[in-house]
Each structure stands twice: as structure tokens, then as C-alpha cells.
Image 1 (cartoon, rainbow, N blue to C red):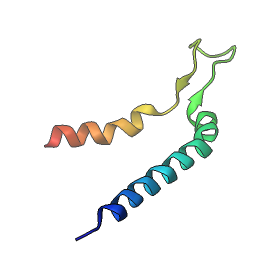
Image 2: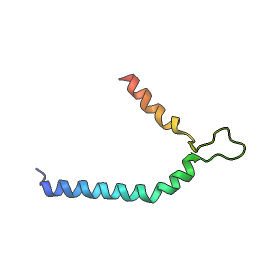
Image 3: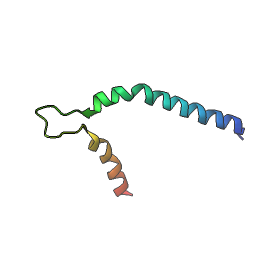
Length: 65
């Protein structure tokens, strides 16, 4: 059986690692995945470029079950 200290340490370590990864990649993700409008755009606010592509597999998985 796992000791509670080890479980808590692993949880805190995983959360810290995930938070660090998100904070380091946040600007990169904004630059890559958000379309900022220009004079030729039809939209006036920043919009996600391919948000539906990431949602579609989960929608299909939900409908299959």
C-alpha cells in the first residue's frame, strides 16, 4: 500500500510540473492558435483558429457511448 506522503508528493509534483508547462507555453499557444484580426478579416475580435478540430473527437466519443 502506498504511503499518503508519497501520494501527496506525487500529486503536488505533477500539479507543479503541469503549471510550469502551461505558464511556459502560454504565449506560444496564443501566437499559434489565435487569429488576431487585420484589415482583411471578417471578425473584429481574436478568435481560435482550429478549436473545432480538437472538440470533434470528444463529441464523437460522447455520441458513441
